[in-house]
Amino acid sequence: MISEESIKALVGHEFPGGKYTIAHWENFLLTECTGSELMQNNVVHPVALFHVPILGCNTTISELFELGDAHSEASIMIESYDWEMFKPLKEDIPYTANGKITAAERRHNEDGSFYERIQFHFDLADPQGEPTATSTITWYYTKSA
Image 1 (spheres, rainbow, N blue to C red):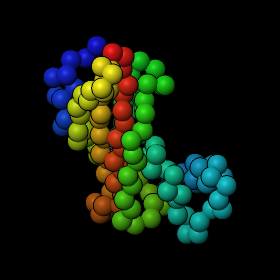
Image 2: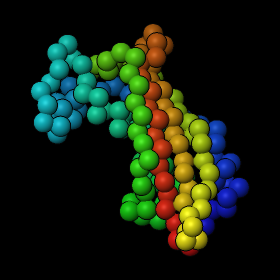
Image 3: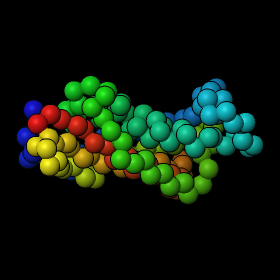
């Protein structure tokens, strides 16, 4: 088990960063999964913000699980996904992604159990460096008493 001090020390952890380009086929499949129609002018469905910032930062969902010492996929509970779009995401644009952990703490329940609350923040910028979107993800990593 990770110590409480180690959890707190995660604040400020930066992901490698990188670039991510959403291809037409990817946008098509994401849009199809939501039951929506493709948007005009190569605009990407916002559901891409679930994974594009993470992959763009050269990290994975598995790494996010490991950082909070998740024992299984069932031990992750979602507090929130907060997306802010400054302009639409578009296909075939190489977005620059940066991300870091902005909050990490251990919380205790009345029954003696506890969980880690970790918040990840990701930024996407267009090729000119203009902010395009942010994604702030807050997860609970449940533990036993």
